[in-house]
Amino acid sequence: MRKISTLAFMAFFCCMSAMAQVVLGDIKFSIKDGAKLNPTTGKITVTFPDVTGVEDPTASTLFIAGNFGPENDFDAEGTLASGITIDFADDYGLEPGTEYTLTITSVKVDGAELAAEGGYKLNFKTRGSERKMSWTFVIDEKSCTQIMEEGNANTEGDATKYQPVGSKNRWYVPSRNYEEIMLPDGTALPMTEDLLFKFGNKSFYVGEYNNGSYKDRICFNNNNQMLVIPDCKVGDVITFSALRSSKNNTYIQAMDGCALAPEGLVSTVTGLKDSIPMGSGLASHKFEVQVEGDVTFKIGNTLMTAITIEEGQEKLPRNYNVVAKFVDEEKEVTLKELVGKTEGTTGSTVKVKYPFWLTDADGNAYTHGTRGSEFVESFDLKNGEGDTTFVVNYNKTAFSGVAFLSEGEDLTGATLCGSNNAVVRSSMGKSAYFAEDVNLCTLQPGSYKVRAVIFDATSALGYTVTLTKGEGVENEIYLTSTLVNFSEVESDLFEITEATNITLKAGGNDTTGLDAIMIYASTDAPEDPDGISEVKDAKKVVARKVAKDGRILIQTAAGTFNAVGVQVK
Image (cartoon, rainbow, N blue to C red; front, side, top):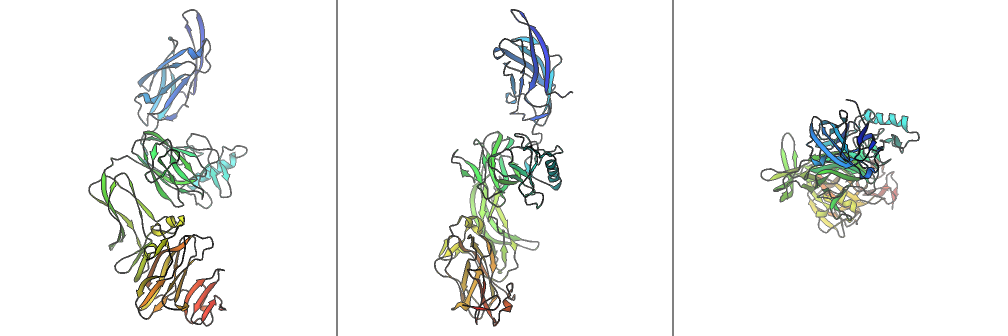
């Protein structure tokens, strides 16, 4: 079968009043030969742009008849000037994922039939043969190389070709609006035919070839990029695994109310929960489809690793709880119930905040989460029999003999830090400061270390949490922040010879505070990263702190010294 994008024929017919020559000229289709169309929402428009011999084409009626393949007959009517649109929504019975040949077997103008000379044909394929329910974006080295090679060959004077962006060797793909993104070898990058992107010029990037920081991610480095997921059903849940690509405000927003986000923000424009802001850590962002058909999302400044679509399910009540556990080959330990028995609705997402540290009955410490990530786990509540339990899996640490463990906000007299960073960077989404001293615990004789997570959102850093184990500066223990927002720090080893109260001294504010604190038994020798052993006369180091000017100060029984052994006042 020959490939046809435009077809020409001439036809003659007798008018009622006189013989006239009517030349229809080229017959054109609105899609290209071999195109892919949605079997329920696709359209093909047939026009005759060069017709002559008709006094008023706008008033002349056009009629065509034919079929899709050997079956699926159709007929349609329109005007000669605007042509005829064959709308699949009229239910021609086209199957998804099937190749068809549109054949026109009859053409009439103002009721007079013109010979079709065996038919005029267009080949196309309907989308969605096997609906892909998930896509994972893989920008491999070969693909990046192909993009770069074409960029090197095609960048001169043409902003629609592959080009380098800035100094990081990102490359952006041709800005052919409303088309699939294709690799130079003709394969889709990195999606299937069922997932379409719409993007503006110089705004859609793939890969980062040199250092790999954008590897396996699609990068939307601008606002108002469009992503279209076709053939959605009401109730489908679309999950974007994504994070922001810059410090600017960034989001994913469903357009025209076609999908809503249970955990989203209420749009000031639409009044709907159709927008989800992106954080700096990779997370799952869910939308529930409200309208059958293609669903369009607006994307801004976002890195995306995957899209998953789940079939809609009947919403039913179901109870759940959430527990923290440690599981290995030898045992299973339930550390804490994070959420008690709660009634939820299937199809919804359960989100739970969790602490950085937990301990078991034997004083072993466990941890979950990492610096830079929000301390939140998400679970999908699905249909099923009976109650369900979600598990947050903790890992065992090297710390044992835990004598005291608490989240900062759980201590007496705690005031929550008001900085927004505390919510997204602290375990349980909270850090705290204290207007008065707080008695933490009473330690029995032994050797101990204090380990703490300090929240410090200031640019200068250096906020110090101070504990005391007795009167005088020689009995103070200092823990100083070293990293923005989240610093996990530890004291040197200290001895307790009799039952001793450990007190947290007042301190902190909205941007500095205590996230979590742990005191555990230890026999480790004191660490010496700052040359403490070189301090003259420092026979017994009892504390270490950082001065405002950045100097490390060593507190000893003989006085306070700097790191090279010079006494300071």
